[in-house]
Length: 233
Image (cartoon, rainbow, N blue to C red; front, top):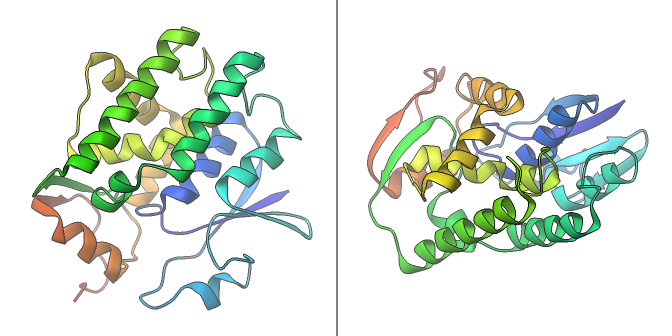
């Protein structure tokens, strides 16, 4: 059985992608969660990941790291990871790669924190540009391939790559338009996404850097998580 190493579900958008993909497609795996530390995670995470980062997939002695590489490794072994139609598959791979390497302003100003509800102090032009591009991409996929998901009727890897965005929209109260918002709602309603969120809000761990980053950008903030065993300084 595969072993998938991830970090905190409240914060780790990179971990979410292969996790929600495998859960949604019924690919069996053992979840191995290693919480972020308040110091450098590299030494600890290098026990199971060559880069000292998550996610990392183990298939026996083989290690596959980085969410995009994990996705391609799974696609070689399991049907349904990418769309079967070659045009939809090419578009899905392109959109996933764009998400994987881009949207820096969204990552900077709206880091994933599943259990928070936040009103931002400001929305810089770079963030607005990222949101506009996200809306454009989502409309393009939904209209071009005519399904409930970005590349057709079925959930595939491209939807997994944008799953963290759905959590970000929920956390920061961001909205696009009825079409794009309905797609985000469909992602949030997936059983795997609900399972991830339920686990995220009861995690006992807090990572100081993440918490401070979120708080520093908030005009107003609500924390829906269960109280931690110890207060964050």
